[in-house]
Image (cartoon, rainbow, N blue to C red):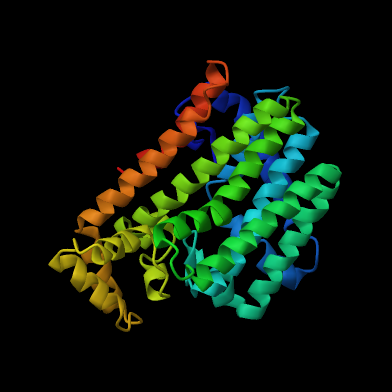
Length: 334
């Protein structure tokens, strides 16, 4: 990630954060290698493919509310990205995703066992980094990883009898995505000396930003192509995972307001979507349905709610940059 594409709305902070992010990138490159030649190829695969680095950026940005990016902040930024990378290896196996960040997924290149073990290896590396940050950081990291696992489990099991599927899904997103982004922001504030109250504000901001980010991804997964996102559109649909646009259709079906086009989409989802033609047909139909606009509006609302959490933070460049960070999630939906 270069200075020009840091998600901070053109803030002057970009010139401050860019070299620090480069330092994080160098440390990350070292952290994903160092086993042996064969293992290093797999463990560095996704890190080398790039990515938004949203979590380290947020850690560095939150640190500006304190004393800035010291050694502990830099280490924390590496740890959260390592943890994120670890989850991607596992997610791609579970989703049978052929692409990640525009490159072949690890399991496509080396098989499921290597991909799963590589994810485990990266989590171990993240734990080693966090161990250097003290007992409280270890506890927070463990709690965060627990939520990541619970989110994936709850997504796989589905809502309980009588549970609202929409509320269940938001809970999944809060665990799978929001928890680590919240921790990223908390670490930046905490290790820079910004204080407990500020760290709590940033943690709540990050939690809501995380949900907004994933809701936006649900929309982008249907509206963009693989060349843009680096992922195959509709992968979740193919694996039988209902993302927010589909859940909104099912909610309309439950209350008797679903139109004919929506009923056809749900009927098609119950068929075999392994062929590219069948999957494309469903994706195109969802793109044309107003449920997609409803999902887009929901992502915007969560981003706005995240910004509202920043009210206790004094006005200034850092607050403006945090606001731009949340707004970027919505801007990419345009």
